[in-house]
Image (tube, rainbow, N blue to C red):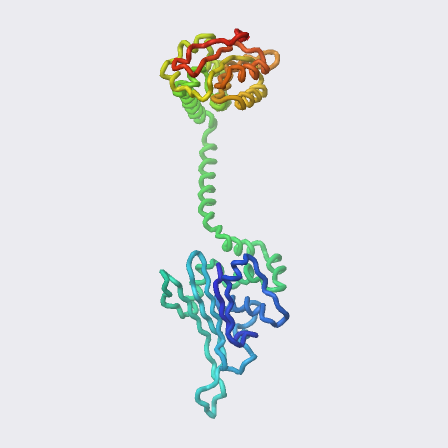
Length: 396
């Protein structure tokens, strides 16, 4: 809720009309009601609560707000508040029960007559104020509906009169839960919670009735694995640089191994150790001749040359080599081409990179280990000019 304006008259120390422009205060972000005792700080807050709900904090009656600084009837006690909530602008005007002088004196009656409390609530729609609600019950229902708080909750949460904070903290858990659930609108989660409870019960029943859930889960995992293999194969066939290098991205291979391990656990069968080799077999010296011209023409040409080779690496060394090659070139591809590990825990990795100069990549490659099948292709030529090994770069 955002308060725009408040007008008080004949309430507490405000015997004369006082207008408070809250929009100016709101522009400051945070403001303080300050003043000596009796200046009317609490009256402003009490008048706000009275305007909205017709009640006053602290167990006092609404009539206690009526000023005693003027004789009865000299001024009509009234509070007017204009506020916006949920994008809707309202104006509420409320007057407490009070005494006023009689228009006609009678021998039996006193000098004053009681005027009952009144209230008016209207909404601004399309730049115009609607017809006001004047029944106290209708106004109360509308205020509670838009603020999502009744008078007691508003006092506890928004005003929290002096000395009652401890009362809120020491309230029973159920009482605080009801208040906080309504304040933060958590009722919408009740349906979600109930749905999850029903689904949990249904799944528990289904699992209990199935002695071996893996019997049903196994085919599903096998189907996921088949889809994963197909995705890897399509990656090789669709991406020209990967096709020419006869590898796929290491991330795809890693995902493939996750599914393969899951399949093996669920079905109780061994892991297929030849899976990576079957997908990414490297034919020494033959891959360039087999590359299709159309695929080669689609290869990125940002770098001047393409450098390829195979070397044994640990996963950590492969990550470091990828970082170094990324610093000097692009289209960097590193992928394992087998599963057999040597005594140092290394497996063969196929490396592919585009660099401005061959030596930009050859240096990091040789620093990482012995390079097999080192080859360089000139990307400037339409046909890539065939593979060529730079001087001193034959073999290792």
